[in-house]
Length: 265
Image (tube, rainbow, N blue to C red):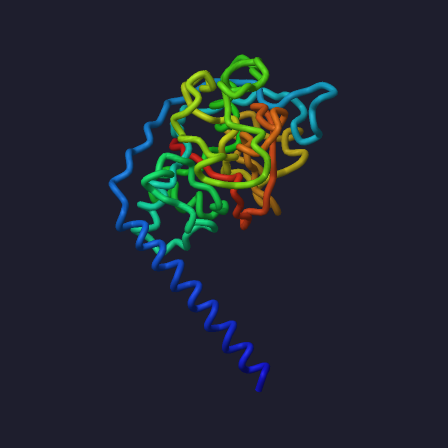
């Protein structure tokens, strides 16, 4: 009898939690003003050098190799909480973890975080776009001159990126508006490809993928256990902001360090 009572309590709790999240998702929509569209930048067709060599390179960052990409477009900014709220209002997508902390009047220009890979993929598709490939992301951040950071080879400082803020999360205290850090833009004019929120990309992760990846428009391994993230976050040390740095997470992961931006062929 006690066991049945526990099951009933758990079922009621789950049901209440789901209903609470749904009400929260809808209440955010009520305070929503139509969010500004993110402009996109054209990245021209052509080659660039991907990866890195040398003693400092990690196994999955080697070797350097030439990649030829077709022309594509990519968002100038990370997707914001206001833009993601519009997506939630029109779909049945579950709200991100910690969505109850979002105040759109204050945080609408911050990057959305706590989204897993499928959330990011679904949002991009809803916008008629897609997640960038890992190669597209790196060219957008690195350009064709092999730079270490989106802004060049200068080590990061607080005028260039949002990073190294520890582990305690708060939308107001650790995330910056997506239009911040004018001096930290990439050679194509993209903001915050280093720090603020790490970014999901389309590819499955392969530790030795660079050794045999195709030269033209690589798409990553056909399958895998992890998806790739790029760019580092508000919490990370400077060494994780490098343009060639690779990170991996289970695609089901939701955390306060990870957001995304979209691209388009």
